[in-house]
Image (cartoon, rainbow, N blue to C red):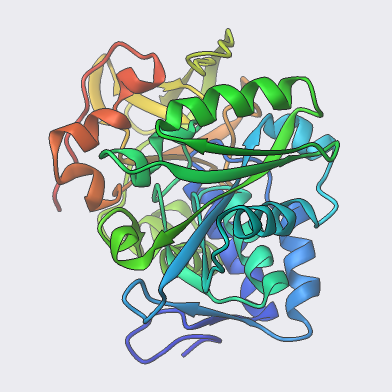
Length: 360
């Protein structure tokens, strides 16, 4: 068994020795977005050197949970890194405003920098981290969190920008949060930390993606242990490779509203087939020789064919040798059509139908 695991394989704590695998897994589950994890992983590793953070299951006796995350430009986030106080301050603002204390923290999304950031926030607050998240991967918008797919009574949310501005919103509609926060961060540093809640644990249990921390650790560990793409894919249940070869073309347009950034074409070295991956902030839709083969909410993951390091939508370049992989999406999104629609390609501004997952 590894650090922080029970015999059933679930992660029960994150220790300093788990951080590399956890961060690598969250980077892969970023699906081409979610921001660079290196800085936050380094901060988490230092923090956990003095003791780990407990990881608890969704049905683990918690009563009130606060979701934390980051909103805004991941590029600016890399250039203007957090001080370490923004997320704890956002969490504390929600507690002050509502008069309720949280007894656990959950990552708003496991993909990308938010996964390690949530663990760091839990550690700073002296709270356990829930083995769950609200997406199962990365996604660009607040209203795409699973918490908000079905109607929910007004929730309290706080954002703390990189310049120190604090905003507390009682919002009946998650789109209001999106509008207010996007406007604020565009004029106040380019990104913000946020906290939402507290949410009763029984409500969250029906609206979250369970097992996300465990999945991130296992995914990162599998990438570390694998010697090649084939070995990595074979070690992950339901994973498949749709193309491996050189990048022929990269197009980027950019759309601040729809988050559509362009597409990339890869020629498969073995078959000569052309895979084209459409991108928003993340890899969203994939075709091979014009036939759709994968889409959100499945996890389209692009990695360097040699190092297995994830490649973001902003860093793919013509001539790179990449592998295009598909990992299963969270079953929660497939359980009802209105859930699937919230994270389908059209929700990202791409005019394409959702591609059902291939059952192996």
